[in-house]
Amino acid sequence: MKNLIERTRTFRRFEQDRTIDRSVLEELVNLARLGGSARNCQPWQYAIFTDADDCKKIFPYLGWAGYLSDWKGPESGEQPSAYILCILNRDWLKGSDKEAHFDLGIATQNLLLGAMEKGIGGCRIGAFSPKLTEIFKLVDHQELSLVVALGYPSEQVVLEACEEADIKYWRDGRGVHHVPKRELDEILIELGFK
Image 1 (cartoon, helix red, strand yellow):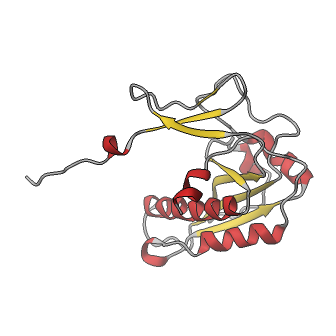
Image 2: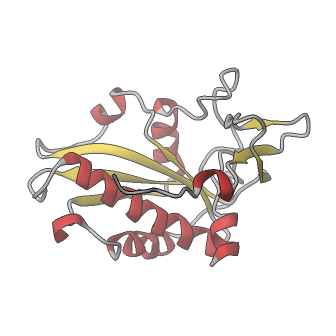
């Protein structure tokens, strides 16, 4: 499990021509569905896109890497070969949006762990243009909240220790993506009672 978690990174460059069968993505959505849910309301729905033309329609509306301000996203040939859109169904929502978004974190982590087990990488994208919602036929109670881009990774992502609390990810001259992580002794604290 530890190895799978370590390998489940955020990937932003893919083997675009290597397709993912829809049935595989349905398996991943099933893993998302099985996660815990506050009040068990299960307010999330998912739309799968694997067609290359459909993926080209989605791509221009996505933001890719906030810390890499000079990089506008993967080039042609490195773009995702599939997307799963995460849609909040407000008619199914029993609690708060906050609870629903906790559920979404659980669901998408299940999805991405399952994907990596199959050698598929992904990127959760919450930074998308509001115009993206305009290209879909959503009804009033549906709200697009997150896009999960998927594909077979064409980049290397390595974990490393933070230096002087610098948590910004970066790319080296060879294109290797470096992700600083805080050490366990920094995040594990002793908490006393008042």
